Image 1 (cartoon, rainbow, N blue to C red):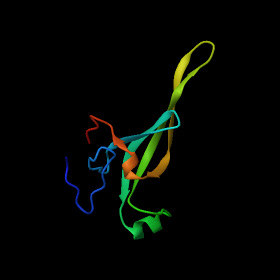
Image 2: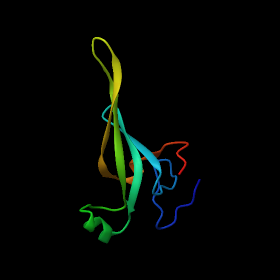
Image 3: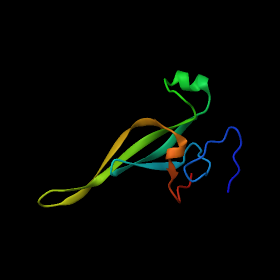
Image 4: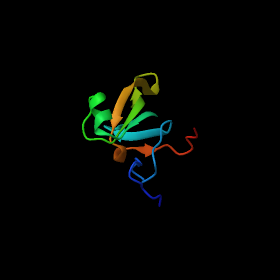
Length: 99
């Protein structure tokens, strides 16, 4: 198990999260995933970004929803989203996401 130092932000599995990691969280029958853009650890940074209760992980998300079926085809809806702040403990790191 990795050791946690004061400034380290860790995922749901206890692995350190770093900028550039590809992460995901399950939500409402779908999956939000994206690349870590920034890790906010201090109150000052959080205030500047208009966030509360750091640490937060700032992620550029892609949203993946359940397959949508119509009469002729079945497809998954994927949207390139916006930057969103997540609590690090809700995120999983995608395996094989090499920087």
